[in-house]
Structures are given as structure tokens and as C-alpha cells.
Image 1: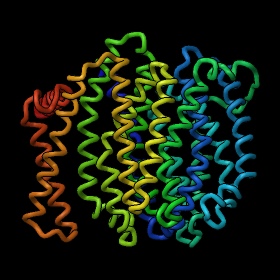
Image 2 (image 1 turned 180 degrees about the horizontal axis):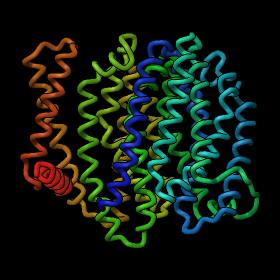
Image 3 (image 1 turned 120 degrees about the horizontal axis):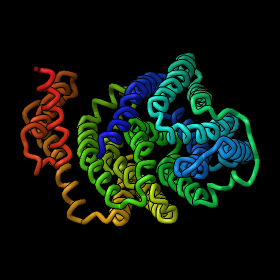
Image 4 (image 1 turned 120 degrees about the vertical axis):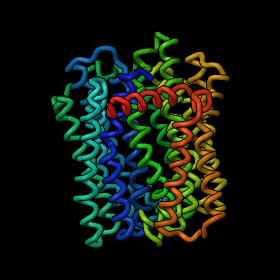
Length: 486
């Protein structure tokens, strides 16, 4: 990974750390004032609205990022088309809200969807504005917008309303407020404005593949929402609440790392699509750095899921412990496939991306449907298997586009697997020596010991074992430490 790309990625992730804190804090507070059933209502609403959001990102956002030249008239016409489509979707949502309520069999869900439908317009504005910020590499601004919108929507709106006893209405009101703040700030900093034009240039994204990328994003929405839809339809609102909160914890990590990664790497690979050698070096370097990190995070959360659920959600959510553990066991795949997708989308392979998303969606729905007979945990296993399958497929096609050898890909995973294995062996050894009751001191001891083992591996093992990218980072860390000491 080049220093410039790595720097951009670090800036965007660092700027989102505060957003993570806000998300975790709001999750911890809201879970103690809103029932799992209430979160089931929120999940079914966000699934429905997410369909429109995916369409805007794919049809308009990705097209603007990939486009070589963009002028003000093109931005205005694209925004006009996006808002026109948003208003059409708002109308359809209001008409079909009772039908959606009948599908889920959640009493009163139709009114919640109608109330929240204005979010679609905000998402249309945000998709176009955020695409411009990505083009201009304004990653600090993107992170700041995410932070401010989450503070305003979650901590200042949802939390007080939840404490006042408004249950799921507190959640959807905060969701709407977050979208409004996000759209306003991104529109302001991207200098897009609301000057709308309606002409043929707004169809450029569709002619250049935007239509297919829109389809791809819709398929991605179907894939990621499939498990939640199955949980709500087969097991009810309470089960959906348990599953969606577990997925939300996963999503906090994804939005803090995977989403910034996609925003940084997709434009990079788009600019390198005619330079296969440089793109391959960038990809292998990024995977060598990120894959071990993702594997470590996922393993540690899976091992300590019991404690994490009790702290963040409370003892009323203990049924979510195994769900969290299963979902985080494949975090490395959930995040790494975003890098592979960055290659496929950046190289303009819309049909390949759409085909892969179709397979992902089918695998997700069939897997979770089969697992639903075993409850929420069965749905989590079905979703995890689908994620692994999709990761293998996207990795295969990304490697084909970049002419990466099988041995290169195998080495990446062999280097990465050392860390989670070491953490797991250390954890099991400690469990045999120390009683398994959940206490803060025990969790601190376990985490400190596991962290010490992982740090020792990073410091002591040769580059041939941990991989050349981590070895390069280690040299930089040591060199900086020596300069500070001097």
C-alpha cells in the first residue's frame, strides 16, 4: 500500500473513531430503554429505506466518483435526477406501507415507514454530495460529517426520547434527524447546493454503467438485508431485534473500517484500472496489512462476546451472545470483501459485480432460511456461511483482474491466520487455568495476556512469518521510536 493511500485510510478511520464511540454509547443507552421488539421495528424500517439508499449510491454516487470529468451542470442534473427519483420512492413507500406491515405482521409498522420515508430525500442529496467529497479526497470532512450527524441524531434525539418512553418512535426519529444533518452538512461542504437541472446529462451514469452499478447496490442491499428479513418474517419482531442489534455491533466495526476503506480504495483502483501491475501491488500490499488486523479484531470480539454483550446491551440481551460470536468470527471476510469489491467496481466490471451480488443474495437468503429452524443463532450461521462464500468469489475475481497468483493469495492468509490462532490458544489456556465466571478483572487479564502475545508475535517473529507488509510497518514503528528516543 502506498504511503499516500495508507495515510488517507488512516485519516478517515481515525476521524471515525469518535463516531464509533458515539455509536457504542448510544447502543449501550438505547438497549436499556428500548425493548428488543422496538429494535425489530427499527430494523424492518431501515431495511425498507435502505433499498432506496442503495439505489442512490449505485446509480449516482459511484458514477460520479468514477467519472473522469465532472462540471457543475452535470452535478446539478445528477442531483435533480436523484431527488426526482427520491420523491417517487417516497410516494410509493406511503402507498405500500400497509403491504409491508402485512408482510412482517408487526402492528403499526406502516405508520412508522410513512413517517420515516422523508429520509429517502435526504439520502439522495447525501449520495451526490458525498461522491463529490470522495472525488476531492476530503476524508476529514467525510469523517466529521459522520460524527456530527450521529451525535445529533442518536445522542441528542434518540436517547432523550427513549428515556422518555417513546420506544421505537425514539429510534426512527433519531434516524430521520441523522439523515437530515448528514445531507445538510455534506451538501454544504461539497458546495453542491440545491440548484437542480433536468436534462439528458443526468442519464450519463446509466449509459456509462451506472445503471448496472445501481443494480449491484440493490443486490448488495438484498444480500445484507436478507438475513434480517428472514429473521423478522420467520421469528418475529423480538428475534429480529436480537439479531439486528448483533449485526449492528458488527456494522459499527464495518462502518469504522470497511466503509472508509471502500471510499479510499475504490477511487484508487479506478485510477489504476489501466495499470495492472501497480494495481496488483496496491492490492497485495493492502491485503497484507488489513487482513491480519481484521482477523485479530474479529477473533477477540468473538472470544469475549459474553462480556461485550453484557456491557453494551445489558443482561436482558444474553440471547445475543452466541449471535455476536458467530457473526464476528467471519469479520475478516466481511471487511476484506470490500477491498475486493473496490477492485471489481474500480475496474468498471459492473456485470461481474452484479452477478456476484446475486449469488450472495441467494446464498444469504437460502442459508438463513435453512438456519431459521434453529433460531437466531441458526440465522447467524447461515449469514456467516454466505459471507464466506461471497468473500471467496470476490477474492477470486479480483485476483483474476489483477493477475495475482494463487500462491500470493495463499501466503496472505497464512500470514494472517497466525494471529487469531495465537489469540485462541492463549484464551483457551487461560480458561483452563482460571474459573470462567464473567468478571471485569478476568476479562482485563485475558485481554491483556492475549494482547501481549499478539504484540510479541508482531515484534519478534521474522517477516517471512508475519508477512512483508507487517514487517515494513514494524520497521517504521521501530525507526520512529528510535528517533523519539534520540
